[in-house]
Image 1 (cartoon, rainbow, N blue to C red):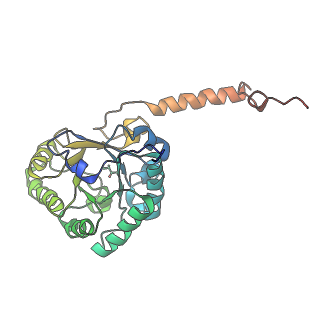
Image 2 (tube, helix red, strand yellow; image 1 turned 90 degrees about the horizontal axis):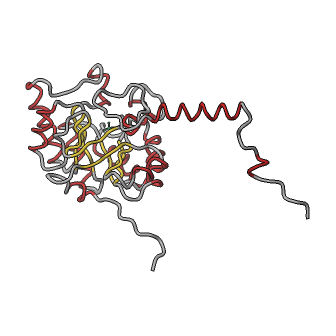
Image 3 (cartoon, rainbow, N blue to C red; image 1 turned 45 degrees about the horizontal axis):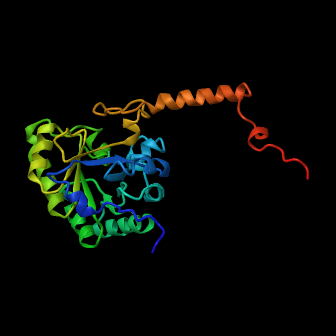
Length: 274
Ligand code: KIV
């Protein structure tokens, strides 16, 4: 008998089964310690390409590379054992063809041990989603506000606020679901459209700035923990870790400057000579 504790990592069918049932709880995560902290409390961990801004100070997600995603995903896998880990495919690694997408997605799955990948785009990515899922790579779709389109759209704009936009976005959601994705992120979408799409498709919708009508929610963890001084308007902050970290660092700096910091003489007392 193995002495190791057997832990069950949530599976793709289990996430799918959240449709019309309990909401899917998802957060982004990019490193091992935080993965350990949130692992038992969420169903899904997303190693999002938002790590470009959050971890690396980039202006948008376009500079994120496959190697960066793989490095952070490995750390998250080491820190977690329960939540299903999905990794974003960064800009430039999947749009060219289903074959290129497969090669890069396979690298993510093989090198990190994560279960699934996420990629942006609706109808235009359906063929690729089908190609990946038929070959063993589970996919989460992502429509609405798709940050990798920032230059084409001229910024980050919410979607679905006029009814004229709805048919194309509904067609995107259907195409992603029909192609075999097991869930879909709806980002920056007006509530009536998010609710309509959620009712129309058979896979869970996971909203970010897309209202409580979705089958689940995802937030960038640093936004909801109060580490981002300018979080998006829709984010509820559940903690203020930014000010807490600043206060702790300030207290530490005072201790060091006042020589109150315990020195090596206390931690490692000198041994008596034999
Ligand atoms: O990269 C990311 O964090 C995401 C979420 C915002 C859904 O794609």
